[in-house]
Image (cartoon, rainbow, N blue to C red; front, side, top):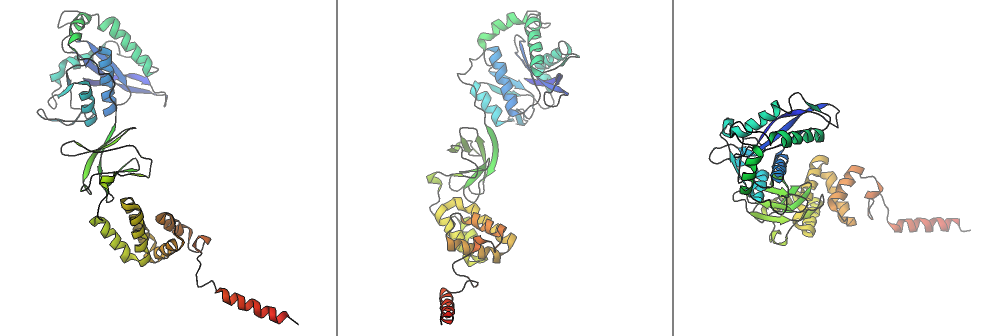
Length: 365
């Protein structure tokens, strides 16, 4: 497998001609080639091109020889290369094994290098196309009518005839295509969760502060052990801003990091500490981020203003303490939102009663 420079094709979005990438797969025995065009490349596109090539061949090669491009190989090493996880899993799904070449030694895959140059110098030389589909159709027609029917210069036999002999040795295609996922590394936060697309998913106890690999797609979010690659947790996707915590991941005792946050909140102010403790009592680990948010507000607006806002929140029994305190500070303390039952500006009702009675008596004849 290898990439090469493809023809110029007009981009439908910009209206300008862009240089394409030419993906080439060449079988070692028959020299049968599959050539595919793409505007861009990524680890998923690289793996998808392999899938398309396997489907066109009607089978899977047992070994894939490739260069050390980042889409396939993260850390080059002739004896133990580190493969891109998505590419590795896609090949595993198809039963194929990747064999990376030596660094800066492309001649180790000279057959595919010749396949790239053959396409560049023969059908694609000087060509421009108005769409990627037009360019691919032109290349497929040339592949079928000329490249497959030619007598190969090295084997001295027709490529199509040799491919008919080689095809039974290919592995069968799996029943289902590979399900692609996104991949990244995440740090387990103080609430015991990792963040993926603005949603939060729990890790097992004891992983706070550690970095774990995470895979996610439309169906699952998976947390993996960074040393063994074993599955730590599997969650269903959650909506943005929400948490997905398994019961066994909820701590039996308050973690030291959370205790320190609550201690900081208590030092910032009596009502600030009370609000933070109540949030943690009602919501558990989910409240850790909101406690951090309250402390951030105290740093931004000053402890005195946040203390007053927390006092109001406790008095009226706000449903979401952090959101109430934040909006209280944004709108200002003089808005109707901050009115309380007892305030120095509000007199006792008995004073109003006595005032009304005195005015009433004065008006009597």
